[in-house]
Each structure stands twice: as structure tokens, then as C-alpha cells.
Length: 400
Image (tube, rainbow, N blue to C red; front, side, top):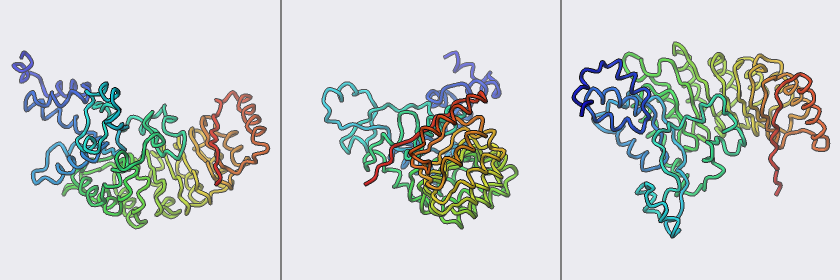
């Protein structure tokens, strides 16, 4: 009551500073205190939109389609869509009884399932994808694309009941949402396979007459598995980013995107040469050494690079990475299933990249008969230089 009676005496600047430290789970209640509180708490509450169910996506979509656009949409800076939390059948008896207090969405309940995990309202969905000192949380295994702690793709049951809701996100709906969120700079839509050109054109477009929207460009873009995007739409996005005053993309994931060619990347990478730190290009069968040479030339701050199943990449370009400026920053690397990259290429990276901590060599061209010998030699060479030890990951390759 004292807060209610004295709220008008709190200067807006001080209240803004206070609410910046309030957990997101409490902001909804604070927004109801007064108009002053609402005007400050709402932008903070809706700054990050984190969606994990089809039901919540449809609710968010309805807000964007509303004739009276909610003012908080102008505050959205990140949109993260991920598979649903783990589910269990409701018919699990005593275990279900123990979980009675766990909130379950109506769409899940109607399908005979219930949540195994509670919703963490303090999470934004960017905790791991933007981690600087915890990259191993999402680098161990390119098959999983992203590894968000214990909730990774490998552990998800990819049935339509649990994970496949992402495939129902249409291109036009996503484009409409982006249009309504002019300050969006982080877009994580991995697995939304219907996303295509309309989404990229929406990202490229200016959002108002004053051209304020995304003035500094995108900062994080994860569109892996979005196979409907064309190279024309991608280049339209790149040209739009070139016109931004200070393009600053840090994270880029184009894995499994069939449109990606050497041209798409060699034209785009110079644009983000001063900012790009994480780049995933898994299962891009069209790219060649030309792309890797461009990475070596234009990405001096790169810390994470995944080239899994980019089969046309060879030793020649991998060696160019070792002699480029990024050798001083590269920490996480995947050359998994690059059968044209053998011990000669990997050796150059081991001997030149002081900060290298993790290398995935599963299915690479390293001679299997002498692999243990090579690993031992590389370990000893780094010990002599007093460099950190490298963890070499090697997943078994199953042949059918």
C-alpha cells in the first residue's frame, strides 16, 4: 500500500533502473501497479519473446494481427522458437499425481500428454545461444544443431505432439510478426521448415517512415533447416544490411539451407568482418574452399566454426584458416565428415590456433590406422608450447 501511495514520487529514471534488475517473472505483476509502472515494465517484459508451444505461438500471432497493435510489440528485440519441453503420457499413474501442480497447456492436455518440465518464466531463450564462455553447451554434436543444456534435440521425441509444431509456422505468419516488431535483432527459428522468402524480405525491409527499425542491423540469426529460402531473398537481406549504419551480426546459422552457395557467403561475410563470432554451415553441399578462404580472410574474430558435411571443403582451405588472423580466436571447430580433410589439415590448426579447445573430427579423412598416434603427437606439441589441451570429439560412424 505504501508503494501504491508513493509511486508518483518515484522519478521515471530511478524506477527504470530498479526494474532493470527485477526478474522477468515478476514484471507482469509490476506492470499492473500503475500506468507509470506499466509504461516501464511492459517494454522490459516483452523485450524477449520465447515460445515453445503451438498454442503460445498462435496467441502471439493473434496479438500481431490485432487491429489495435499492442504498444509492447515495438519493444521486442528477440524472438526465439524452440521445440516443446519434454512430455509424458497422462496415464503414468502415480508419477502423474506427483506432477499435478505442473502447468499444462490445453493443446498438450487434449492430446493425452502433460509437461515433464515447468516453464521458466525468467528465461529468454538466448541464454545458451549467446553464451560466450559456455560454448560447449551447444557445440557437442552437429546432429543436434543446438544443444540447450539438457534440453537438446537429441533428447527430444520428434513426434508431432512434441517437437514438430515448428513445422506449422508459416512463412507469411513469420513475415507478419517481423513486420510488427521493428526493433527485432535476434531471430531464432531453427526447425521452422516453412520459413522462406517472405521472412527474409521482412527482415530486409525498413519498418517505418523514419527508417528507425533495426537501424544497427541483425545481431543473431538462426535459420537452420529453413529450406524454402532462395538465394535471391538472402542477397536482398544482405544488401539491406549493407545499408545499415553499423551492421553487427554476431551469430549466424545457415545449416541445412539448400540455397547457400559460395556466392551467397563470399558476398555476405565481408559485411560482418568486425563482428561475426559464431558461424554454423553444416550440411551445405554446394559450398567449396572458396567459402572457407573467405572466412579466413574476412572473419578475424570467429570463435566457433562448424563445417560438418560440407563435403567439398579440402585441406587447402583448412590450412588457410590456420594462417589467418582468426587463428588467434578460433575456439570451437567441427570438420566432421569432411573426407577431404585429413591429418595434414587438422595438424596446421592444432599447431597454430592457441585458443583451440574443441575439434569434432568424426568421419573426417584422418587415417584411422594412425589416428591415435597423430592425436598423441598433437597433444605433446601443445604441451611443449604450454597451450591448452584440445578435446577431440569422434562420434561413431554407422554404416548400413
